[in-house]
Image 1: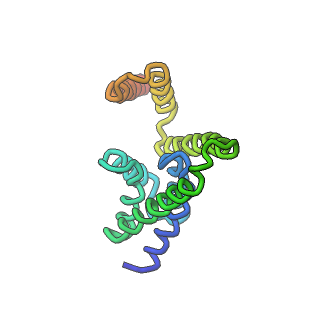
Image 2: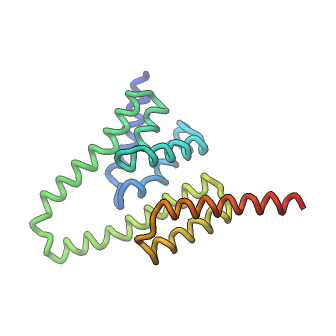
Length: 184
């Protein structure tokens, strides 16, 4: 294993660790850009596959860094990517909490917290759009995602497995309809 590859992995994931406002989903678009377009460590299809594996695996939601590190440089790459993504943000959160917690009732502290919320939401939306672009699911994917969002917004207690089943049923119906229309 080349040392410069491990350094490159660390240099990709450390900045994302420090800017993951809104959680791991907020940095998916950036990770996709760096690993697919900039470094070409994985192609678009591999990125989607690794994203799916990381989301299905138990543990933190952002195991994507671990599986990308593993893909690029084996187990050592997985170890470096995991540390690069999780350690800096953990240290930053702990430090900020220790430094500002006794000011949490002050106006500037509330403004800081409220100001970061839209930043996190915007980053999450960018990550979702990035995945949509890579998956190239077309109108069907947007309709299924939109209906899933509507269901979960108006019925937050609706079972997630039910949403997944309805999405799968919708995709199957759309595929069957498309095949039927093209055969005419």
